[in-house]
Amino acid sequence: MDTLIWILVAAVLAAAAGYFVARMLITRNAKSNANLLIADAQRNVEEARREADVIREKKLLEAKEESLKLINDAEREAAKKMQRVQSAEARTKQIQMQLRDQQSEISKGRNELDQRAATLDNRERQIEQRGREAEQVMMQAREELEHISGLSAEEARDKLIESLKDEAKTAAQSYINDIMDDAKMTAGKEAKRIVIQSIQRVATETAVENAVTVFHIDNDEIKGKIIGREGRNIRALEAATGVEIIVDDTPEAIVLSGFDPVRREIARLALHQLVVDGRIHPARIEEVVAKVRRQVEEEIVETGKRTAIDLGIHGLHPELIRMVGRMKYRSSYGQNLLQHSRETANLCAVMASELGLNPKKARRAGLLHDIGKVPDDEPELPHALLGMKLAEKFKEKPDICNAIGSHHDEVEQTSLLAPIVQVCDAISGARPGARREIVEAYIKRLNDLEQLALSYPGVIKTYAIQAGRELRVIVGADKITDVETEKLSAEIAKKIQNEMTYPGQVKITVIRETRAVSYAK
Image (cartoon, rainbow, N blue to C red; front, side):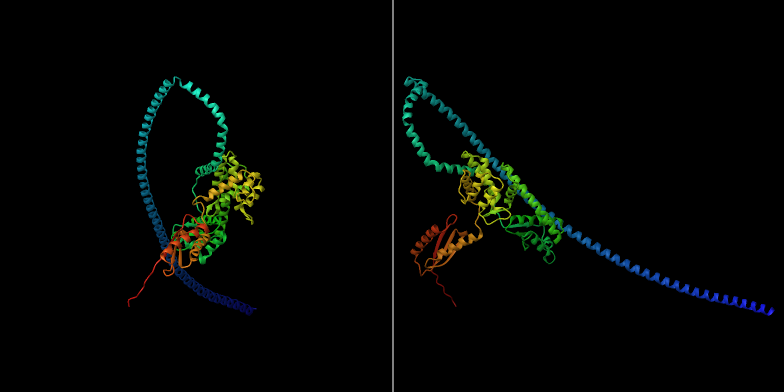
């Protein structure tokens, strides 16, 4: 039993000793591991600190570069603004000089007017004095006649009237016949008087339409933005508007080319908004063009309404009003169609008033006479017939429809308004400078001039110069004599006069010369 107890005590002691030894080993290993972890943590902290220093230095460099870039951009912008200010100051100085010149001219004109007024006052006083003298002379002559005849002025007048009554009655018929004959002879003269008076009362300035529009820009740097990367912006703009955009070396200008003035106006307004906004890319271009197209359509309707109000025309169908507004963006032989129609309407009103007809209906027919040139579909019909059909469709009166359809003799004239509209249309288009020939017709006329002269024998070369107003004909000295040159010049002039249509006159110059050429070697 005692042995067993000692064995148990020894086992307990051995276990306790093993426990303490194991605990000591574990504690030592834990301390060594803790030291290793602390060392690793310190190394990580050092590495993180070094990386933070590198990142901080990098950010400082980037901030310095960005600030330098902003400073440079600000300097460039300031230089541009300074340049604009200088150019504006130059323009202001130029305008001031022009104003001073105009003021001096105005003062000079005032002095001349004052002198003329003084002269007129003197003449008026002289005329009044002479009038008083003439009245005195007439009174003296009348008193002498009454004294010589023994009758008063009233008695002499009554006797003269009685004596002339019988003669007037017998001669009345012959007078009437003479008046009728004279009226027939002067009818044409009176018609010309009415036409001339109408033209004078409705004379307006003439504007010739072109096929291009020049869009002005502040500087040439904007051209690059409009073109875009690889030309995508300008291609998108041309595709959206249907207008050719020409960006060349012309300073501060971009040319918009197109036969349709509506498209050119849409392109111009869209470019203006894009340049002002500064955001130029294909999506933005399509958005702006669509917005501007709606604005132009609204402007067309507003122009039609304003035109109808200005001319005192009421009750037009909304579609006719829109067509009248579209006339603003159409031209005929270079003449603006809306301006031509307004002028024709006013001429019709004046002429109708002179002839005792309704001027309001005449003005309405004159405004609508070319309405067939502006429909959206534009079928293959003469514009007069198409305009008549449109007027009938929108419930215009028959006499107005007939005036529209017959102003180029496509249909028979059945109303008194028809010849008035026809004549006024011709007057508006025939005034000097109102219309111009198309380029092809102009070139053909010059070629016809040259070919006509070349058809004569002995002619070597011909040149049409001075816009077709002069023809130079060069003949061979060995083929035509000096006397024959005069005859040739007269023959060419006569043939041109009989066979060709031309403005003004054409001067024909025949040149015959002999040249002797030698070379000294």
